[in-house]
Image (cartoon, rainbow, N blue to C red; front, top):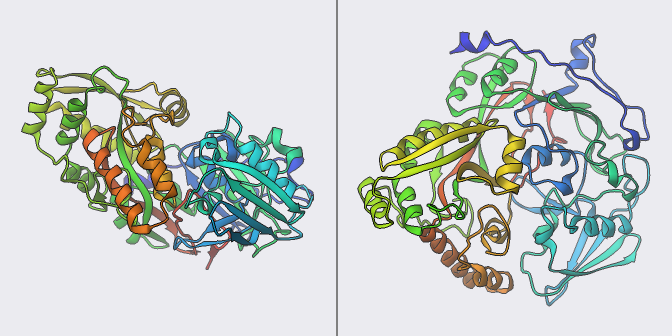
Length: 507
C-alpha cells in the first residue's frame, strides 16, 4: 500500500493574482524559489471538490463555505465545543418575549478593501441573503424587521416566536459583506475575516493571505493554499512527499499515517449524517412500501465496518447521534432481507425494477457506500444503475433540479434540530422534502415551544415519522479522517460548516 501511494507523484501550479476590490494592502505569495523557512509559513490543504464560487450567500456547498469562513465573518459564531461566542458582534440582548435580538457591533472592523464595517453593512447583508437566488433564504423568512439603532447597534425582530433564532446568525452563509463589492463576490470575495483572498484558479487552487488588519486575534500562519487534488489516494501521496500539510483521508489510511515518520492520522467527530436519499417523485419510490423495503434491505453495519472501519454510529432518522434531541429509531426498519422482499411484493413489484444511483465523485466514502448498497439491493431484486458524477453536476442535477432516483451524500453543520429537519417540510422545495406533509405542523410547533422537554417530544415524533415513511435511508453519524504533517498544531473540526484556520500553527 505504502509503495503504491508513494508512486503517485502529483505536482500543482499555484497562480496568484491581485484581487481587485479585495485588498487595500500589498499581498504576499509563495513561489518555487522560496526557502524552507518561508515554506513553513504556508499551510497547504488538499480538497477534492472545487467550490461553486466564493460567495457564501449563494451556495449550499461545504467546499465553498469551508474556504469562505476564513474570508468572511458573522455576527456570532461557535467554537469546537458548540458554544456560541462573539464575532463581529461583541454582545447581544434577546428580548423577554424572544422575538427580537439587539446586536452590539465591534467598532473599527475593516473590510479587506479598507472601509469600516457598520450596522448598515449588516442590514444590507441580510437583505441580500433573503433574495430569491439565495439557497438559505427560507431560513430567515421569519424576520419581519431590521432596524439600525446607530452605526454599531442593530435590532432584528421576527414575525413569530423562534426559540432557535439566535443560533441562525452563526452559520457561515450569514456572512457580512460590503455592498460595493457584492457583484463580484463569486470570484473576488471581500470580507472582514482573518484571511484575505488572493487568487482562485478553478480546478487548481485557492490562495489566501493573512489579514494583518484583522480586528480579532490574528492568524498564526501567513499564507493558506487550498489545493485541488482529484482523489484520496493522490492526496495521501502528496501529503507523504510534503506537497500538502492537511488532507482528508479514508478510514483505512489512518494506520498507514500513524506508522509513517513525520505524519499523523486523526479521527474527528463530525456533526453530520450519511443518507441514501430517495426521490419520492419517482414512480417506484412514491410507494411507501418500496421505500420501506429498501430501508430493510440495507445492512448499515456492513457499510460502517467496510467503509469507515467501524468508526460510525448507525441511525434511523435525520439527526446525528451526538445531538441532544437524537432518538434511536433504528429498530423501526431493521435489517431484514426476507421482510424487505415481502414488502416489495406487497407494493406490486415481486420481480423488482431498476433505479439510478447517482454518487458524488469527489467523496470516496459515499461512492464506496453506494457500491455496497447496490449489492445489497440486488438481493431483493432492485438493480442500481450507478452514475458517478462530478460535484458541480451533483449540486445542479440532484440538489437543485431534483433530477435523480437515489443518491448517497452527507448532511452536516447545524446547531439546532430544526435546521437539520426543516428540509422535510412539504413546502420547502428541498430535494428530500417529505411530500406527505406529515411533519409540517410539528416543525412549526417546535419553533414556538419554549419548554425543553416538550420540544424533545416533538422532535422525537418527527424522527419516528421519518423512520416510518423513509424519505431517505438514514445510514450513520459519520466521523472525519485526516492526515496531517506532524508539525501542524491546532487543527479542529467545528459543528457547523466552517474551517477556522486562525489557530492553526506549525510546531
